[in-house]
Image (tube, rainbow, N blue to C red; front, side):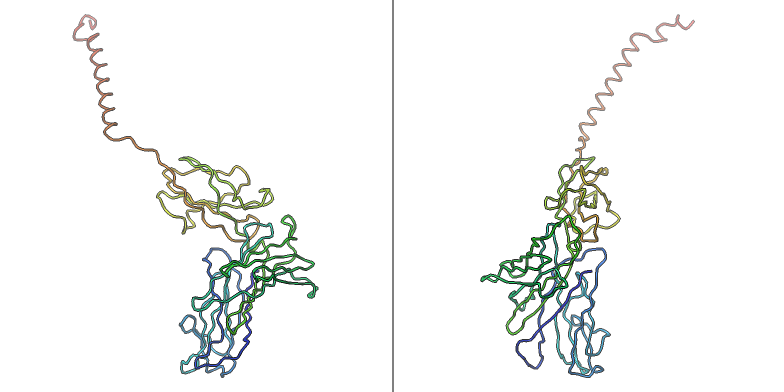
Length: 351
């Protein structure tokens, strides 16, 4: 189960007419179909009496009242601006709830986590803690280099290194002790510490690689008017018989893009080698995507649409000319037959 946790510490006490408790990050992912895994996240305001407090989400009043509101966080929704108000409508406090995305292109131990900063502020990653939990809590040792961009955490369950990109909104990690052919016994937990002025924010997430694996785009190798062939993404693990993918194909009778595909247009195909499928008549666009056949993970992005050339029709003028020529040939044959034999010219043959 994917779980999103949120923790915040205020390094200095700040008061104002409309106090701003803290800022967080917001999610930059897209909605994907399929089951999601919720997490419960409490927001609290403990100064006022519960009966005098109501809540809003992105400015819209909700039924929740009291000094605690439980937010159900999903992988790609549930985030937003949550504010609590007094009975007369005055703003007491508000927060923006974090949703971030982690994914892996395969099972080689590499994974990436990314986020988008709120336009009103930008924080800085000051520490990263990533490990596979074990019974020995004192077994973990994390350190960073002088640049603050490279971090390494070692334990009996893993040796994981992470790097922060120059934009400060993406972390790329690799578990150097991970074996893609073995069962993943312990999940990975990553905690990112972000500093912004007087605030230190702590964002944590844990997952198995099988939960976040997301293949690259499908490679189309050959296409014509009757069939199409494709290959596994170059970034996917091999042998494909051990790491099989499930493919979805959508065909359209017009030139279109593959960003939104209705379920009734999708055909599912399972293959490990020599992947191919027949093309329907008059198909002009084909779209592909893939997912791990053995786990409940995400689908890849739709492959760039592939246009299929249609057979050019002969011009009507040329077709009509050919018909006229054929008609002349027929009339010539009739004329020849008439010259050779006709009953009216040889009445004796009828007696």
